[in-house]
Image (cartoon, rainbow, N blue to C red; front, side, top):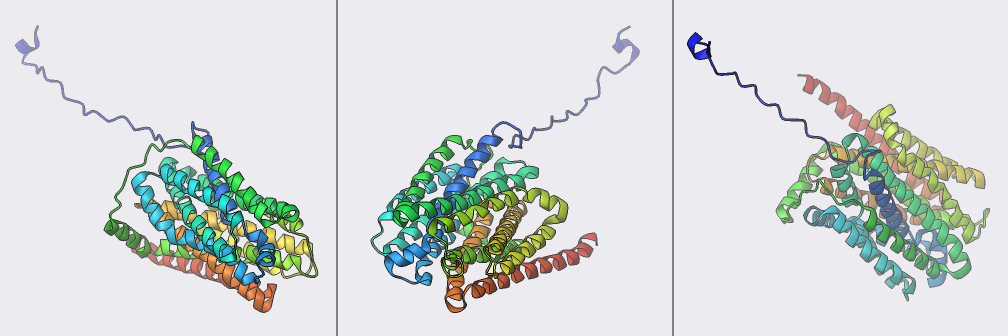
Length: 424
């Protein structure tokens, strides 16, 4: 019997369709493209730090070559880091409009070109100007790289991915100083910085060939009002402000120590040759390890616990470096380097995770504060060394670490106050 004759309804209740879950196409460790991306940004980090600090291990030779003091020669480092600090926000805005990979490629191209001109600087003034231009060009790398990672890598893998980029920074800083030390001992500082320029060219070419095209980038606007509004939003966030200050203070320590250490080791009781002084920077390998393991450190101790450990390790290294024993000085540098790179990786990854919009600007503000700290550390550390010797430089570093600990404590207090409000 037909349904119509029995009075049965021929209508079947519609079952609402459930959309299939969208697969997360962002990169993850072990997935396709992740290794290429990691290696490409690792090489970008190598080139950035090798170029940015190419004159730092050579400051005693530059002082002799131009007949200037340590504080005058230190401007070859401060100009580069200061140029980066000033231009990192404008460059991040360009990356929002034209894409992360495009801006990073252009930045490296300009920086390596200037790097090939640096050896021919006829005076200290010209050298400082070239270094400032080089730093401004490199400003397109750090913030754009972190924004690229935040967009293209899954959140759970973000700390590890940024840690690998920071590890590239440490390898670049280490290899640049070691290579320049030995090359300069044989052929002078000009050939040494030229060698770094050639190496950076190779890194830049490999970076462009390896970095996967972005799949999750959405072009933004270059409108100044929107940019200023985004910057104001980030500066109004208390957590981001604390992270910016922590990055600046950690870099104040690092910039001061590694700007001055070459002068200390050429003096009594060490009197080391330039090649050996350059090899001292092999301790950067410790930073490579501590930065790449920052994700696990945060997983065990939490962000604030990791920052306390990084600050305490750095402070311990500063105190050890006061000894007139080369093994103790080296151990001190190991601890300073490990603490700095761990703290930097933790703070910078926290910025990328905290920002909900305008990630390039959030990272740019961190990088700006970070390199302002580097410029301040290089200049103030050299002035303190000129006035009070190595103890003066260590004193500057300890004050900066005290600032890191104080800010982290204030962050803990603010978090506890916020819990009852959230519960209510």
